[in-house]
Amino acid sequence: MPPAKVKIERILDERTRQNTFHKRKGGLVKKAIELSLLCDCEVSLVLKSGPTKTCKEGRVTAYCSKDLAVMLRETLTHLPMGVFHNEDYNRFAKLEAEVGGSDAVVGVPVTDGMAGMAG
Image (cartoon, rainbow, N blue to C red):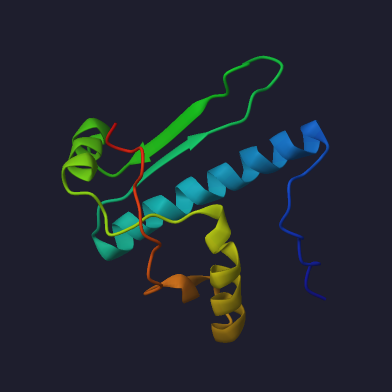
């Protein structure tokens, strides 16, 4: 029997939320590394946790397949066609259900805007 689907909404319990963040962060970094190695592409990923008891500002974690500063400069110089937002989740979930796999988001057009990125 497959595991129950997780409802995608904010986790109210702080300890559970932190544990979930830590586990999913590791999985996301692993996927970013795999994508870079398998597809010979450049990948950068920057995550900032929410505030915790030990770190009121939250902690920043970054992975980059090359020098992070160089990749950030390139991103600001050549702004991407768009950027994904939380509001795009339903579009990703719908495509995954239709195709039946987590790689179904390939080719999904991104939303417009990098407002505030260069300033």
